[in-house]
Amino acid sequence: MNAIAEVRPIEPEHPLRCGPAETVREGFFEIPGGLSLHHGGRLPTVRVAWRLAGAASAPVVCALGGISATRRVCLTEQPRQSWWAEVAGPGRALDTERCRVLSFDYLGGSGETSGPLAGERFPSISTYDQAEVLARLMDHLGLASLRAIAGGSYGGMVALAFGERFPERVGRLIVLCATDRPHPLGTAWRSVQRDIVRFGIEAGQPTQALALARSLAMSTYRSGEEFAARFAGPATFEQGRARFPVERYLAARGADYAAQHRPEAFLCLSESIDLHRVEASRICVPTAAVAVREDMLVPLTEVRAMVARLHAARLHEISSIYGHDAFLKEPQQLRGVFAPVFETP
Image 1 (cartoon, rainbow, N blue to C red):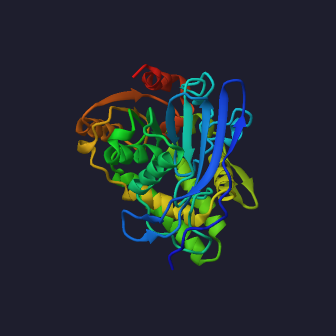
Image 2: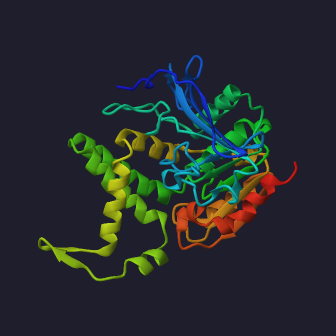
Image 3: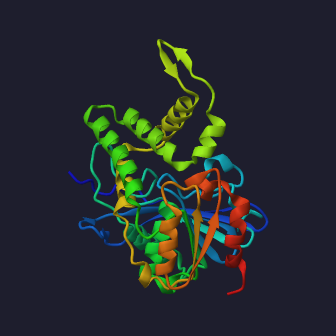
């Protein structure tokens, strides 16, 4: 059974003053007439949760993260509740004193945008569908164009899809740790994660299965060098079995994730990563692509190949012990990548 988009009462937009020059607006809107999906099917009702924060009247930059990211990109008062606090904010690489940051909860995710209900399957979602949601959000907010879209991981895939479909509505793409199509090895890892979750759902233990799948995912996000530096200690013995330092870390991260996300939403957006295909040769929007040499999920060779297919792209190669997660953890290395966003067009 396919789930129909969850319908909740539309709440009024509520602007908040957060400082002498910063304004935050948050709200919900419904896409009129629903949404036809790229891979087939239609959602008759789609509710979108969004947030716009930063310097009043400044240019707008859309920031999009991985499949677990939310619309809360940077919260000045509560940075731990936002996903990009090290990169976005006042005086940071994505400077909210010089721009407004727009984001939304992904379609099909665990946020407040329409997504799968517990125990139900949601239709397959494409990065083109997420791009369409962003375009409809811009229409709702009266934004003819964006200064840039900055996307990391899945968000970079959505940025590329938007650049192909709506080139006149964005001035620049910043694509971090993402390409125009997934690498088969990454698909292999994610396929196993999805099978774990499906098995858990069938066995009546969906939360435990999601925690285990996330634990496996965490082993692919960082580099071998970081794991060696942090988890080389000896095992301890508890209840007749060995427990390894890295095991404790993975279990904790898995439990944290499972407490905040729905298994069905994970299945939907994980699949969306592996369904992702855009035509890089059709993207003419100026693009900065960031590749991390230690990234196991998005190999450097794949980013180089994508840049060769793009019409107006520049490749930034960096090295980071954080591997794929470098787009979250390397604000100083990313500062130069974001600098052109703030130049006069």
